[in-house]
Image 1 (cartoon, rainbow, N blue to C red):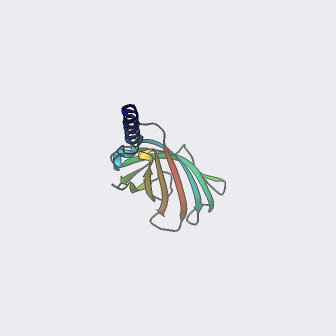
Image 2 (image 1 turned 120 degrees about the vertical axis):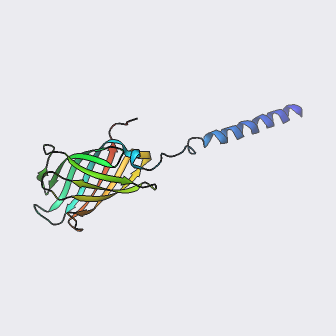
Image 3 (image 1 turned 30 degrees about the horizontal axis):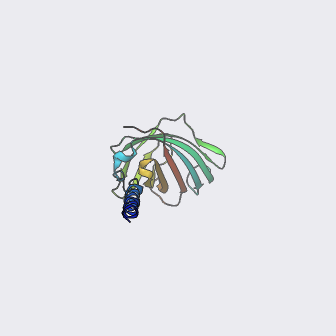
Length: 160
């Protein structure tokens, strides 16, 4: 009887310890949502449509490399095509802009291009503790309805 009691107590202790340990990673604190969370370089894929404005209209795709400084400033280079026509490439002077990450990991950014394209404002969501930034353009040149485009940015390098 004593042996059975010891075995049962040991089994219960292992079960409790296992249950406590299994939730350890799930309870780890998430990174704080703020401008510092996305410090560093992100590679973005861009997809959507250019609906109006100067230049060609139609399906829009591209890639961008954006550097967030952790303080609300950004620089970006990109290559973009609209209906198969290159409208921007990596040879232009980098664009500059500003961004804000709110405490709920939503935010916004503005990009001021140096190659004649109008400024773009996009809303963003930071996911996976800052490893990814998802965006949607909300205006171009101060107007809505010109660009219906979204992008997904992945952290290129982690900066400490």
